[in-house]
Image (cartoon, rainbow, N blue to C red):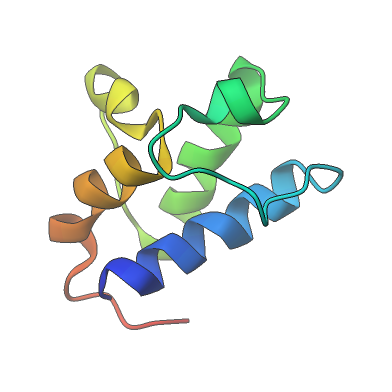
Length: 86
């Protein structure tokens, strides 16, 4: 997957977790928690959904890497480079 595919996948996951939030104005460089009504359980849902859909294991020490769209895509890019788009 390339950066755009990963971003699209994250948006799809976020739309399932926060269906009432408008993701069209999501700023890539601003933390998710500043833009969306996500709590710690929602954040864990993102991690679990990545594991379920793409078999990506994210160590708890790396959770801060997933704070914004830019940082999430940058973190996931090497892990998902060989993953086929679903």
